[in-house]
Structures are given as structure tokens and as C-alpha cells.
Length: 272
Image (cartoon, rainbow, N blue to C red; front, top):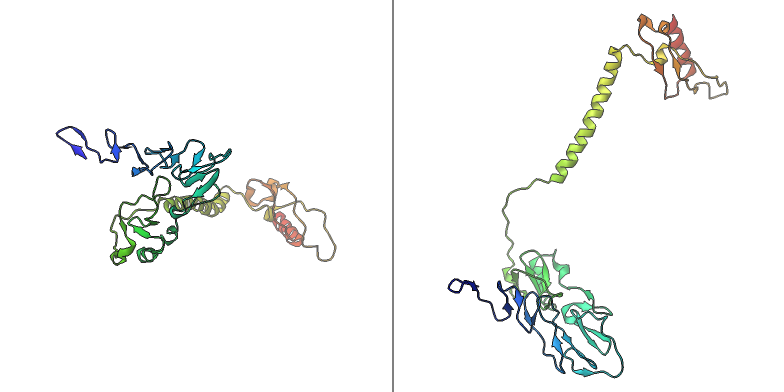
């Protein structure tokens, strides 16, 4: 805490630094927990970023450097934050949620209760589950730098009666994503509808008519049974004389199949 008389922070015994942001010697992790006792000239991996594990000189190994190993061994592959090495074999801190050949797989057995609520979380006393106010269910037995879960305040498993649901009142926030998608949909639909409505009006105003009702050049008729009404009209220029009222001519490129009889009827009516 801040000491106004000395104009500096007064730190707890576990912490150090100008703002108490560091761990004092023999402590490790964000919470500056006490290191385990290391023997046989072993030293603790302390500090805020430390694992709390004992670093043992050869030929010693083990949780406290208490095991003397015979022959060569390698402990470099073991995750010291999840266990310790014993003569080249990784021994995982199972009680803290670590497993795997190298003790590098972490799993909190209480996390699965996070979406079930406070009461369900608190009933799992075997794993010592506590329910945080941020909605996370975690095991209070886990400790250390990598295996702990920071919880500002929790309902302990032995006090499940305090699991009282409360309504959080706050300002309503608009979902910008839905607004953006809706705006894009409107921007795409409105021009398309306007084009469908205004295009025929604009074409009539400019004197452009359907090529099929003004004139066309027929393709080769297919007289086989069932095919006489499936000929496709070719693209042609319509002469001004073929249009009533002297309206302008257009280049017609029909994109649909037209019955040949209807096409001839349109030609005759256009030239009459």
C-alpha cells in the first residue's frame, strides 16, 4: 500500500519493487507464492514469471532435488510448471490439473460447470470447485503460475447458500453487426427493385420495343415432332420501317425460346 509519509509503496513480505510488482526472493508467480524447499544445492525458479520448481544440479532430481540419479538423464523436456523431473521421467502435478508425457497438458475439472451456474459448481466438492462472480467455475486447489485461475471473488464450495442470482442492470447496447448486415441487404435490394420497376418505363419513354413484337429473323425450322415450337430467334437489326410510328430501331438478342408460330404472327402484325 502507499505510505504518504515515506512517499513510496509499502509491500507485503512476498512482494517487492517500487510498485510491489515483483516477487521477493523465494516466491514465484503472479501471486508470489512461497517456493518449495530445495535440497542438495537446488535453487527455486522464483520471480513473477517463475514456476516455483527446484532446479537441481546433477546428479540430483525430484520435486526437492532429493533423488540421486545413476547415469545420464535429461529433464529438459519436462514442463516444470506442471510437475517435476525424476531421473529423466516427468512426474506431473495431477492435483493441480497437469497431465501428459511432458506434464504440459492442463485441464481444470471444474471448468465444465461454468455454464451450469453457481449451485452446480459448488456441489462438486471432490474437485474443490468455486464459482467466480465472472461466471467461471474453477478449482480452488490449483495454484502456481500456469495452473491457477485469477478470480476476483468466488463463492466457496462450502457456502453454496450464497448462490443467489441477481439481475444486472445496465445500458442496452445495439448489435452493430446486425445493423451492418441489414444495411447491406437494404442497399442491395432497393436498387434491384428500382431497376425492375423503372427499366420498362424508361424503355417505353425512349421508344424501345420488344424485338419479338417488331420483327426478327427466324432460324432454320425444325419440323421434327415435338420440336416445332422450340426454335430460338437469332439476333437481328430491326429496320425503322418495321416499327410502327417511326420509332427507333434496336438490336434484339432474345435470351428465351419462342414458339415459331408466335414469332411469325408477330412479324406479320408488325409489317401490316
